[in-house]
Image (cartoon, rainbow, N blue to C red; front, side, top):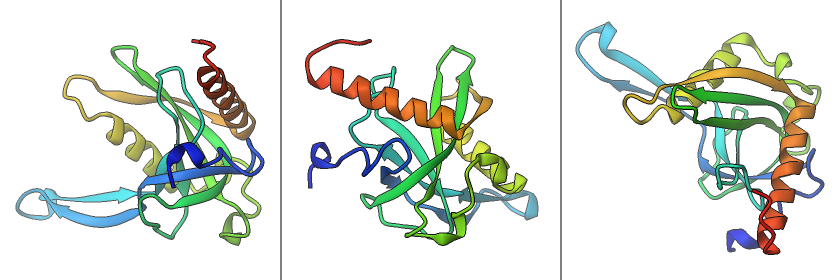
Amino acid sequence: MGQEKIAAGKAPPWDINVVVEIPLRRDTVVAGAGAAGVSAVYHPGNYGFVPRTLMPDGEPCEALVVGSVSVLPGAILRSRPIGVVELAGEDGGGGSRLVAVPLERLHPFFMDTTSYRSLPAALLDQIERFLVGFRDIEPGRPMRVARWGEAEEAAELVEAAIASHRREQSGESGR
């Protein structure tokens, strides 16, 4: 199925589809000798994008769906946003990334999670390290977390990105 045929969600902004590009992953990479040379690579969720969205940088809205089950790249996860992370770079770059949880029917563990603040502090740290590390791929262009936003802000971001995509598809330029 082409990405253009995948909806942004069943009932956006609170029921969105995330097309997974990078699955949840836990493994260890040995970068050198001894214990100091071992570094753990951990993706705290399935990372991807919300189809039929357009952010100011011209890319779809990106999202990290926290959980304990890894899915294959290309899988579509119905999710609910619980927050947003604003990234900032020294060069002015950055952007927003959604933090979401799987819908209750997929994973009831997150049924009562309505805000990123409900997640364990260790998981929030892992999310920050993943997002900063994922975006900090060019030497000399470091990223940092500027701030976290609540679920309502994440929902507004999804709505704005859907509206921007619609304008782009209809030939209007809202940028």
